[in-house]
Length: 577
Ligand code: 59J
Image 1 (tube, rainbow, N blue to C red):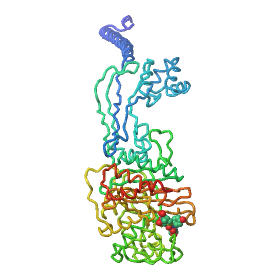
Image 2: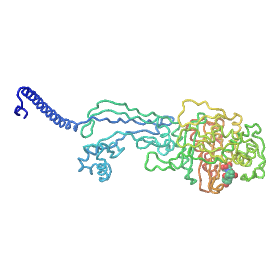
Image 3: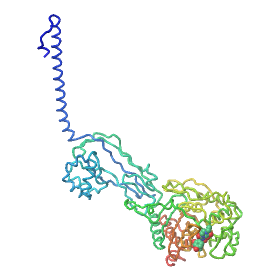
């Protein structure tokens, strides 16, 4: 239009018009170019979109398995088995909405649930349909050939020992993260680090090419526990039987290797199966061996006597007059079940005299007494590493008057966990040397620390052997072929305003072979609700059966072969009622 315009001026106007002409041509070709470029881009986008729908580059995670947990001999206790999880890309799957009933039916899900799930997550590209399905089912699902449905490899934790080791192992959640027990305590060690890689997927979500690894997966580390699966099973079986027989509300048993401090067995009732996540209840999965405390009652007496012997003022033969079978300390009346008269220190243990223990404790300084209780581990966590472990309670001797000293001497006014009690008996069994307890297998013996003198300990073990003799409180703790040393406890439970008259804890703590102890076992039965509730009747038989089995499984040489022929402890125990 510029070109056709009539020249307004002559001369200089002619040159002006040519410039305009050139500019116009330039502008025209520029717009043609721009148009072409735009056109090209449109075409290309169409082309690329088609390509993009056929395959796309994706970053996917590469799962790795969590470390295995084994017993001390390498027997598996927790293993991760591969499973598949079915997931979908809602944007793609919704295209095949007419086939959703088929898919839902196969997965055992309600159709409307699946429809809602897809509709609700329409903006996302990933939604789990069902996690951890069996391989056969996974294959059937993929055979449907539905768009946007794919599998993801995951791992499911399996516990071959089931209920038997549930409390120690704990469990993981569906994402394989430790929630309780060893699984929680050693989660960092056991946990796997998934890797990632770039892949090309087709429209159905199938990987058709691997581009390369971004990060290599790192499987978790294995963990070898101190437990012996066979002894663990034995303890589980015997404890369960005791709880049923005496109608108890709960119970715990712990078996220790006294030289290494390794926990060979740790079981509780009630129990739970960690393979069955849906029915988990706190009261069932609590590891009472470390989370629950009780007053140890007479099982504490050996430590009272230890303090007396360590003071140098008492020998096993020192006589204490327990007449007339009770003894007033301020507001407290200490009672024995009968009048034992004048008895020596050893007999205080044999007969479990509260009066004898109290008179001895009153003669010790608070500091002397406390030192022993502290050194064998009362009032402090054992360091087992188990989640929820408590310290128990041991007050400072500065606050102890005569009443406190007396009640402590026969096991009241302090509280302990079953594992702490086992640890303390471990010191008596290990010649006075304390080794830290461990739930992990130890390759070499830890150094340990001497906390009681050798003579004190050997005197005590001899006294505790009399408990299992015909004149002691726990004949039923005897094991054929082995000398056993230990102590019973029948403990009234403390209730509001005092001590209950119908609620008890029955305990037996002991060691074998008494000539050179290798194992300590503690059996604690909470609230036996029958005619029988004494430690010597309720806890001692379970102790003996666990000990007998463990000694034999460990090939420990019998130190009482004569009794093997003469008096058969097992038949006496099992025959008596
Ligand atoms: C006992 C207690 C409660 C706390 C007594 C148990 C006291 C006490 C206040 C009577 C049952 C019972 C601080 S008895 O364990 O002495 O194991 O085979 O609970 O005495 O003063 O009907 N154990 N037990 N005492 N309290 N306070 C004996 C003893 C023990 C036996 C039997 C009979 C008690 C031989 C306990 C056992 O050694």
